[in-house]
Amino acid sequence: MTKKGVIRCLMAILLAAYIGVAVMMANQQSARDKCRGFDIRILQNDGSRDFVTQAEVRRLLKEWALDQTDRPASAVDLQKIEDRLSGVVNIEDAMVERMPDNTIRLTVTPMIPVARVFDFKGNSYYINRDGKRLTANARYHLDVPVISGNFDEAHSPAELIPLVEHLHSDPDWNAITSQVMVDPHTRDIILVPLIRGHVVNLGDTAGIPGKLTRVMAMYRKVMPIKGWEFYDTISVKWAGQVVASRRVKSIPEPAVKFDQEGDIEEEDINSMLVATDTDTTAVSH
Image (cartoon, rainbow, N blue to C red):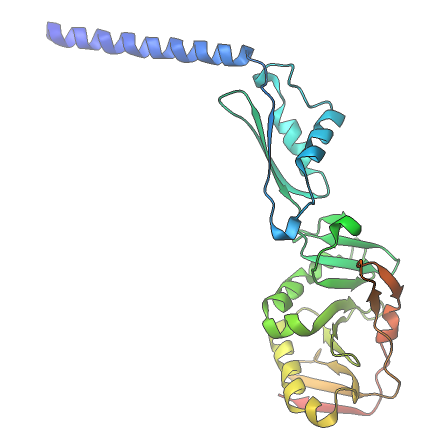
């Protein structure tokens, strides 16, 4: 190696050593610097408006004794803050990171409800796509699809979310569907249309697109002729068939009534689950 090459090699080694020492000193200084506070960012959208506020997050940090602005930023337990926030019912997701200026950034995504659940025990709550619950109250009144039924660990309302999202994505069904109901006895899935007077029995969640197509054919070809109050139940639970049960009773009151604030005035879900008359009409499609 030439003398010039040796000099270049030594300069490169010295430069690398300098950079290493500088980085180490910077990290040590950063570790000694106190936390400069929390930068709380709420990722709001129309579906989660007001579910979480910056003030509420700050209150929780103080309540959990995690508002550690008197400690070095490197000593703040970021993972613990993230885990605690992610466990809050009205928070969908939380990310916590330490920034170069020693502030702690909290990025919080509020829960995004996809349905409101009414169970036959008188409880009401919202659920997100994963089935996470948020208790409903006047502050959290949102225009989302309604699910009703008896639910427990074995029968979760989250099982109906694919159906609810399918209905919501279809302009026709989104416009005419009042709620999705589960019969407490048979566990059949029942659609309650805004067209008062009948319900639609889907049976289960298998083959939903085909079942809804058959019901829509019934609506367009038969109901205008027979009359919208002629049948009390339209069943598509059997493959390739539409079985309509002729009405033998007066039209019941709506299953769930709401006042202007969105609270329940009356719950009589079972009144909509009328018995099937022996006189049925089968409509093939």
